[in-house]
Image 1: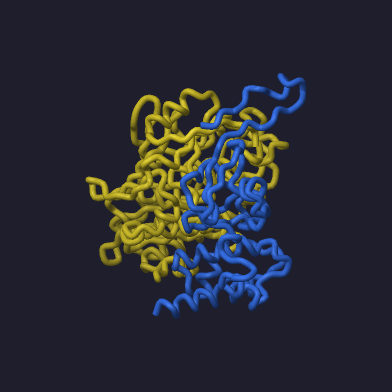
Image 2: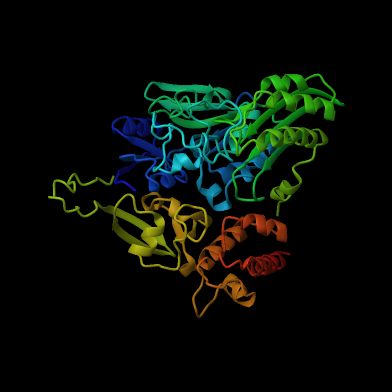
Length: 340
Length: 178
């Protein structure tokens, strides 16, 4: 790791001010991704603003009937929160599908959104990477790209966003609350992360120095009919090749409302509202699900070693929607929800 | 606040300056330690290199293997992906704080009884992780224990023994509760 100075903030305003007063500063929450990137010389902050004393760990109801997740609540405390389990089980399942118990005890909600891609070329400083070093090229295009994007990629970057939690947050249409040198603002979840385009070095739409303070979940949690289906090389502690967050609101057999978001396929959590519209008002049948799935992968492009993801995604969407409609969870994840 | 020394290697005539340090106070296994360390010292390196508690192991140093697992306020974490300076107000428990040769922790005894290791390098992390699992109280069946222990790798492949050892202690705790 490169040398850096460290200070610990006790108030959001102090953290923002401290960050702004140091060239090359970065915030550190749980640190699980940032320290890893610093050890690999991918991230080289000269000053760290420690956030773990900020009063942002609570999980509380919002006046609108939703739930506010503190940016510094850990992924574990969020997943196992009673209100999250009861009202937003999709979020509970998505968080528990990611990382390990140790990492979930450290990683924060804000940090989960800000984790960087696990593209091996991004991590390997001996190879070109437009995200790490703009203009240097992309090692993944034409290289080993089994884990890479099939949707929304660009000629500069085919990296994927690695989060599970964010796929549920996209499906639930969360709102990101941020604080920065110019004050506070909120960002709809769909607008938070970016597609790579010609600026793959930017993962999200935070302005310099802005800090995530919380995530607001709307009142609607789709607690009856949901599924988080994660497909990966081993059934625990691995990143998704393809994951699907499916949520339905049913009136008898008719789909009143639907949400569909995918992980492991794009530079950002991939919510497809056109596919959702194909589900709404339709009977909850395999044919309806197949039409929505076909819509999602309509524009998918393989890069060679990840071509399999297109068919995998199509089938995973149908399966997740079926599980959601049946009110059953992903079979292998049911035990994650057990209680003492 | 820990200030970085302004003396660069170049300014010192090509000789690297000693790393800038600051005071960090840690409570480890109930004992207070005052360390003079650089801010980039991980909790793992602080434990091993400065407090000389070498039971906690450095495996991958990237949060992938779990060998460095310790308990912070009773919760298991990867000490390699955390800075020591972030834990000044916390209670840290390492394998040395769980049991001793004369007074083995039930998990340590169960690991011996079930042949739950070969080389033993992952064992301190496995046992600290299992203690975290017991504290959480959410894993009871074999399937649950496997999932909740998935953050700890064992290169020797002693997983069957590890599972049996953890299951035995989980079962005995459940019996005591009921």
